[in-house]
Image (tube, rainbow, N blue to C red):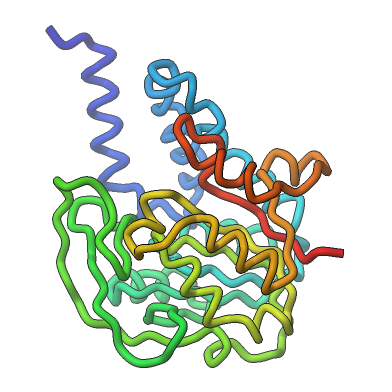
Amino acid sequence: MISRFDLLELFIRGMLSTLKYHFIRTPLERPLMFLRETLKLPGRLRHPELAEIYKESGRIQQVLSQSLTTHSNCLDVGAHYGSMLSAFVRLAPRGQHIAIEAIPEKADFLRRKFPEVRVYSLALSSQSGKVDFYVNTRRSGFSGMAKHGSPQEKFRRITVPCDRLDSLIPRSPRIDFVKIDVEGAEDTVLRGGTSFIADHRPLILFECTPSGTRAFGKHPSEVFEFLTDDLGYEIYFLKDFLQGGSPVDLETFADALVYPFQAFNWIARPAN
């Protein structure tokens, strides 16, 4: 028999599933985000070994609060429906912000929600042209240039324009902070942005997961080595970055992406 608590949780989850994008940039945004995190408590209790992963959302907000000034210029790669973009605009209201989102209807949504932000409706790659893009019909946040997720996932294939960061983003104004969440295509995005990164030297918040990189026939170590060896960056656990700790080495980075996972999101900072 389903308890009243279970019914309430199901109702709230259903409400958030329906409204979770519409409350972005409204007074309800932050209370409902807190409620969404609270509803993860049962999962935390069932999987205490994943405690570090469950802490990432809060730590990301701390990184933003610590790293951005009112004038910071930010780039959101894989903007989805704009939860990160909303934080950029709130914490850096005088900055010039750019969002990149491949799914056309999401890009249109972002333009309506954030009229002051420059929104590009395209995918980022290591070359310009067009690319197949797979829209996850159940969890659109897991959409990307390769199918990513469980075997039960269903996808709708669309064709979208693609470009390189080096071609798309001008040298001025300087970009201070970049978020990259592209479901395994991180290496491809970075390789198309070597000149951009050399010119701007931004802080980079990026996601890297074993399943995401595997969807592109790559290994997380390739992302690490390209950032450190080719681009001259150091990579940190979120908690270590916040506490002034040391960067990770390749072995630590790779071990953190083996179950029980220690991190899916990382901060890259220019060395020296």
